[in-house]
Length: 423
Image 1 (tube, one colour):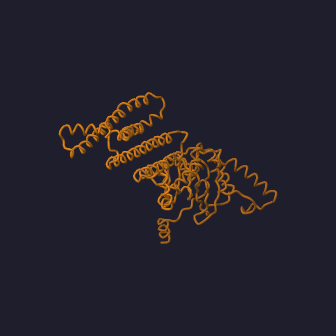
Image 2 (cartoon, rainbow, N blue to C red):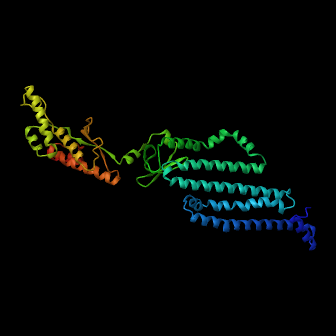
Image 3 (tube, rainbow, N blue to C red):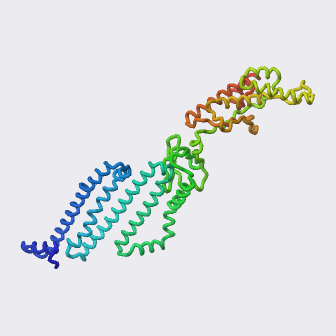
C-alpha cells in the first residue's frame, strides 16, 4: 500500500494496538469517514461563518442595491454550501486508500449528485433574485419576467436531471439527451401547456398585449380586474370583488379580451348609457312650449336661433301654420337633446376635448333610447360612478320640464290601479 496513505497509517496503528485484522478494515473505514465529515464541517463553517460574513458586510456597505437582493434571496449562502462538497470530492482519493471499492464509488456518486443539486439550487436562487429585480424595475415594468424565469428554471431542472442520470449510469450527457430525443413526442405531450404558455408569453411581451397592473376583462373566464401575475402557464387577475381568477396564458392569444390600459393612460373613461323615452310623450313644440323653454338658459339661444331658421323656411314656402304637422317645427325631444348636450359640455368632470354626443338609437319595445356618449376626466371607479350618476340624475329630473317621460314597464301596482279605476 501507499506509505503516505492515511488508510495505511490507520491500519498499522490499529494492528500495533493488538486489534485483529477482521476489525481493522471496518474501523479504518469509520476513521476515514469521520475525517471526511470533520473536513466537510470545518470547510462549511469557514465558508458560512467567515467568508459569508465578509461577503455580507461588503454587500451592506455597497451602494449597489442588486447585491442586497442576492444576499436576501440567499444566493451567497447556497453558494457557500458548494465548497465543502467540492473539497470532499477531491479529498476522497487522498483519504481512502482503496478508491475502487464499491462503497467508495457509491459515496463518490452521492457527492457528485449533491454537487449537481447544489449548483441547481444556486442557479434557482440566482434566477429568483433576477426575477425580483425585474419585477421591481421600471425598465421591465409590465413585462412577463416570471414567464422567462420559469423557462430558465425548467431548463436548469432538466439539465440537473440529465447530469444526475449521466452520473448514475456512467454515460455522457449527450447520450442521455439523445435517448430523450427519441421520446420527444411524449415530452411534448407532457409539457404541452408549458410550451403553449412559453409561446404565448413571448407573443404577449412582443406585442405588448398585457402588462402587470393592466385592467383586463375576459367574460369567458369571468375575469374582470387587475393583472397581478403573469406566469409561464397562467395569468392571475384580481377581480373587483377581490376574488382571484386564473386564466391560461395561451387564452390571451387564442381568445378575445378587453384591456383598459388605454383608458388608464389617457386618464379618461367613457360614459355610454341611455335614457329610454316614452314615445307617447314626444310632441311638436308649440308657441307656449317655446316660451317656457326660453326660461331655460342652456337652450335659450338654441330655441331662438332654431325658430328663426324654421320661420324663414316656412315663410319662403308659405306653409299653413294652423297645423303643426305642416312645414318644419321643433320638438320637445329635440330641444331636450340640445339641453342635455349643453349640460354635458358645461360639466366640469366631462372631458370636452373628446367626443361629447347625445344621440338617438333605434326605437324598440322599451321606447326610444337617447344615448349619452362622453368621457369622464376622472377614472377612479368610485368617482367615475359618482360623475355618471350625477349626470343622469339631473337629466332624469329635467325630462319633465320638457314634457317628456321615461319609459317604464308596467308593474303590478299599475295593473291594480287600472283594475280599481274600472271597478
